[in-house]
Image (cartoon, rainbow, N blue to C red; front, top):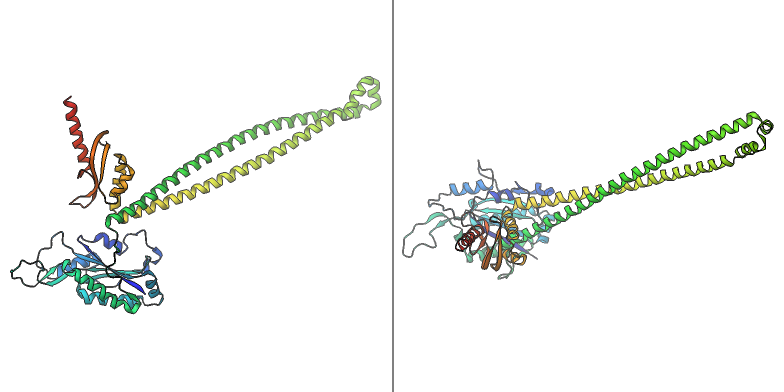
Length: 454
């Protein structure tokens, strides 16, 4: 048997970002888009309500709550229900996913009240099918933390603490396991030491994934640049070879004309000999002339020219073959490099898209990315940076570089950590408990005073 999954998570904001994720207004990096059409909202919204965020607000507005809701109050409890991967895939294969969804809604409505369950979205486009439930913690009764002896009426209140007490949480796990037993699912081990990742650990792991993608993109770009240089060199070599071949061709053309001229002269001499006749030529020119003509007629010079002609023709044919082979090889290598560059471009675009989706899905990653780059700029050792992203405080002694002031400052036993802004909740790099920029300004003041006193 597999195990049930029943997770609760309190949320104080307006839930717009989580709603975009759940309703797929944005594309998270871990979904299979070809299956997104199988996702569905299991609860019909009231008239005029169009999404999960509005449904949460509508429930709070119409619940009859009299007390003022403070900014730090939990407005919704995110509930995630599922089961072991193999068992959930079995339920889908058996055609029981709709039945499983109905039984989950029935259970949640019994435990928390029908009106408090304002949204339930089935996700089929991730690895394991699961449901995201929006539970608005509207309760009726007296406050648990009312002053002792004070008389207090039962009221309608927004109170997540009443819904998620330690005793009730244990009861939910027990009762939910009973409701899901028909699907071959059982309760997880009670008192298990297994824990979910903290938010910082989750962002650290995701950030490390992003950094790995960045490094991979950088390496791909270097490979691309190297291959572009090779391509340029090949093109230059091909151009030089074309110039060399053109020069050889011109030389061959010149020799070809010389051969043709010599052949013309030989043929002219042969024609003259034939016209005069051998005897007349002998009588008029004598033996020496006859020998000269006989030398021509006997093809001594003609043969030499013809042999030279054949040799040149063979050289020309060889050069043509060589030229074609070089051109084909150069074109082949250039085509391979072009194809490789196109592949590299595709990989770079893919990896950049992954990073863009990560930053879009986890906006806080951009803050951690800035902190990582800032640590490099002010020259915090990489080993210390790893401890920072593990949520630890590190002690640093040495020199820290200020990008703003463009100088180094001595730091002695400075406590470095990643803190969060109380108002914006955004992470920032803290030096001795203060924002890094303020710390450097203070060091600059001390430095200036020390310089003036000299």
